[in-house]
Length: 437
Image (cartoon, rainbow, N blue to C red; front, side):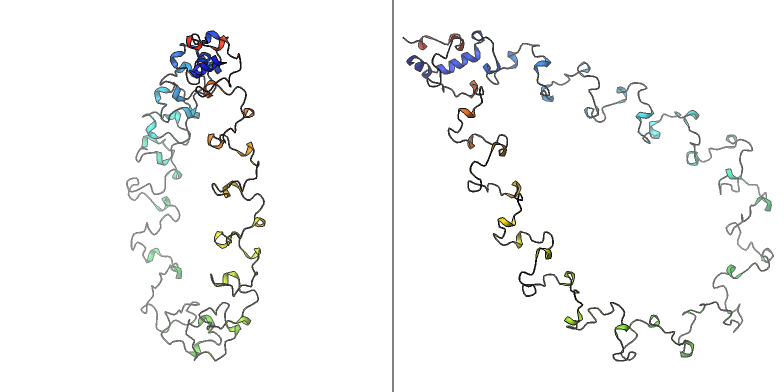
């Protein structure tokens, strides 16, 4: 084996590997394992050699395809969907003649600018399609109206004026009942002769029409006055004396606010019955007026207690239970250091997100507790492997390729005796220096 030692000492290992990778004349056939990763370039491949069957499915991206390389012959039928078409890319020239029908046009999208001049004829208009708004002012002439076809119902209210009606042509017979209203009558057009006897009723008289000149002094009696006709404005100051007020007529509502004082109310005359509900507020209570006896049982609710007013002196030790605390009331600031022990933590509550970064060490993980399922793909790199951690059992059969072997790493200890045959050596690999004496 001295001759082999001499070979490997001079770099024979590299020559042997080169032989394996680059000398197809010695091998039955060149396999993928014989080719060094990344060594085959475009110049090494004969034109037209790679067919579709040689390309793995879904591996070619836009970066591999030259600009304008894909023409109509390369596209399969129905290959271009909506997402493949750029917005605005379909111009008029791209649309086949007659290809667009009503089903292809979204409702209410075509505007006047889209339609050619005179494009719509009588055959395109649906029955009743032309409404008033569609007709230009003055567009309907006499020639457009069928003789004798118009009735009163066909003339819109307010459309006929002086230009359409001859002077003095309208008689009483021409006017419909109630056709003449206030707006049709000229000022002072209605004289005495035009008013029927007894037609002027109270409702016809304008408010505030009568004055002293129209009414005789002392002519109005109680019978002349309507109920509630005399209001505050009709009464003179101090006109209502005691005799005018009915017994019991002055109710609480009649008494002006804040008008009663000590002089009008007898001492201790007001009882609970005299006070309205909620009439006694904080401003009416003297300091310290509400004692324990005045409080109803259970009247002091949480809402009645001022914020931050309860302290150790107001709460009994251990008096607060879980039921007393609102949901989420206890936060990080309320918990004392080390207050949460094992018993307080629900099973499974400590997730990965709850564990601080880099907080777990040998003391927190049980020996041999982490399995392959616990490790993420690619989680174990070179820095995580201890020296000599990878033994033969850990290496898959056939995964150590030439590219994985360090240069000059093979020696007598790695090569099987008589393991290299002629097929393993490159042509011209054995020179005079490699031959033993």
